[in-house]
Amino acid sequence: MAGGLTHMDRAGRARMVDVGAKPSTQRKSVARGEVRMRRDTLERILSGGIEKGDVLATARLAGIQAAKRTADWIPLAHSLPLDSVNLEINAGEGLGDEAVLQIEACAQAHWRTGVEMEALVAVSAAALTVYDMCKAVDRGMTIGGIELLHKSGGRSGEWNRPGARGESNASDEAPSTQEPRG
View (cartoon, rainbow, N blue to C red):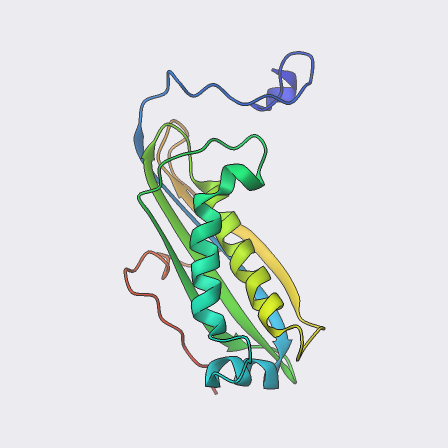
């Protein structure tokens, strides 16, 4: 293994990790990201004023669908049977005339490998869907801050991003959307 990277063989070539001998354990990962936009764009999203349809519902579905197809997006990811994928999309405050949609995804599986990539792909696809549905009214939107917040299960155990808040809202069964405070 080159440099301790599990996806590299001794010669430094990319390879898919063999997880066949690993025990199945409960795996959970939470990721987040955001889409920054003009405040009037967010108002149109929340009021149902985007011509393409319900942006938040479509973004949630896109995130779930993408998580189920992570191995199609990420060449060395394993196909795995997900137990659940939940997305939480909340409106937040930006600076000045800017607003933000915060996206959080929780992926869970009982399997031999983690679900970090599934949570990250879910957030990415949801954010891209928001952009796609709203680009006609705000081409200046930016997608960013996509990061893993939590992972549990497997040999490496639990990991939490330093400074991240506690339990994920995305692990709740019923997703919600909150309007900006203030």
